[in-house]
Picture (tube, chains in turn purple, brown):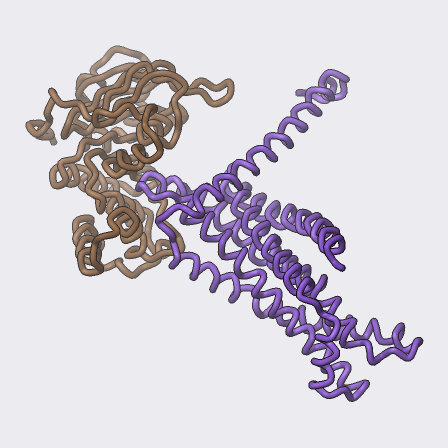
Length: 268
Length: 257
């Protein structure tokens, strides 16, 4: 199509309708991919060894970055909150404020965003590369179910590991916060723990855990979907890795809003 | 070298294709292909790039679905098989990919163990090791057992790829451009390996290539694909003694090359 025909109303309508079609087709294919996951995840044979390997890879790959980010988040959030609280002479509330903020929002989001960048892009690139080099086809023709071995294992692993990593991030962030509070307010660790857990409810704990599980599922599913359906050679691998991160992050923020609304509705 | 064809059973067809058609969007790739492969026979499908040779073998093993026509493999209509039945028939079909398609994250041993562990879960560790070593020995690469695919040459990758399919003891072998991108000496090695596989494992094969040396060395019968249809069938000499200008052009181009 040349530049003249591109600008005609009919051509514009054609391009628009093709774009709309491709969006709906993408959403439909995405749901079919998720449906296939739920069909296959409970059917034997189970690839336990590969799930354990993937869990180790995900944990190992993200641990250093999550430790650093969690620690810094704890310190920075404490430092930023102190002036506002000290205006009201309420610095003793710092541990409660930090622990609630960390557990309810910061730890799940920080963990998910880092995992989307590190793990999601890796899954997208790995599966994309396997697709364009015909490794997935090779599995299929050797009577092995590549979806079960590659997709189910990775999605299960991310769904299991992100909640565990979230708890670890929360712990590291609270350690960072404690160090800062201990320096300024001379609070002992016993008193910090007491105050930190005073205001935390079971609902906070479980909602964060479930939220992280949803984030983990999203990261794994998006990475696998983009990688598994990659095309157009090496360019396709790059696109799959990139799209895995962008789409996963977008969905994570959407899910955050939904889960917060539901939790607030349930909260007494 | 004239190949011994006494092992071919012309009364027993392992692959029978009738009126096969396949298009990708508006591009029509296969336009009514008919092909029979007898038990124990090596059929070479020759043709230019983009004529649908690889599409043909991908349809045979169920990786692609045809638009029209029938594909009968070992007495089963591929189109009518359920996913489970297709898995069972795939165990009898070996597919050697153009670049080997070895699993990058696994060693050579891992690559060979992978299909075996998943399809024969009752096998002991000892039996798996034995099968892996035997098949690697047959392709002459036993000493590469602990190497990663990245450290192998193009020819070695293809041999390991063939070994990975042979470990399941297939009845049919499908070779996608087995000599593409290889030096002439390695091409001869691969051609010999294809013939050894035919003799040792009693396989029937379809060999996709545009390399006339490979076609002559490995094929019991040649089928020439042009514009989505088979133009010529027969022995190598039958095909290239033809007066068809397209066949002559293909032959002359390869000869000049």
